[in-house]
Length: 261
Image 1 (cartoon, rainbow, N blue to C red):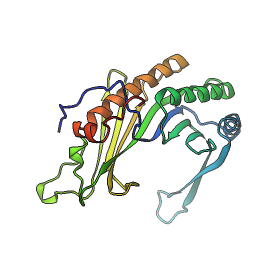
Image 2 (cartoon, rainbow, N blue to C red; image 1 turned 45 degrees about the vertical axis):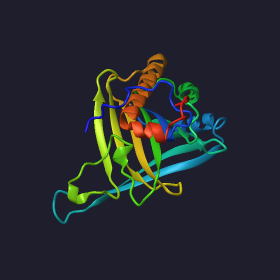
Image 3 (tube, rainbow, N blue to C red; image 1 turned 90 degrees about the vertical axis):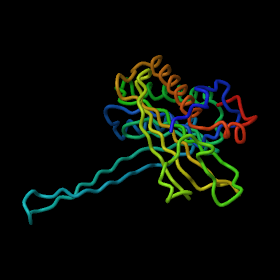
């Protein structure tokens, strides 16, 4: 279904955006050593005093091509560091192949969030020197809360992204949609996930609108082009968000809630 009743952009934004988490991530072409990861974590400690050691262990079995021969168990351990502000809303993850800066709700503004990322990115570069970048990504996870007057809320009345099923399966109690799109103008791929999620608000139904914009081709390597790409990703993300919500959602959920997204 194609939506035709929504504006392409809403430059004034939202005063109280429905963002539960915003993420900016930089992936490197080569993994960082444990020593470098520890140095990055120590540098981030000033702005993110709470520290958690991360460890991801994966175990696999390598089988001999000849039946009955020996099997070899392969164990891989990936370590990283998770740091957060005192109130736990500002996060920074130093991982073997990436730096991730995250903002949990309440989301302040792009100006505030992107400024924090720039600060952390420049600090990281002083510690690591030049590292080839493999991917740059921006992800926004939105939760849209809809007042429920009965056991069902028809999300197609509020979102322009929803599962379509035969009549025999309607009405749906829950559903999910995933789409992947490519935007030639910014050379980025967008993965969209949407579906019903548990609502933390009494007498409401909540819907997820998860927008992940990433670029893996001709990835910028200098600060100026990196920041320009991030801004372009943000604008594209906003356009997609506006295209995905209906006019009824604007009128009933976001009415009076502008300026700040």
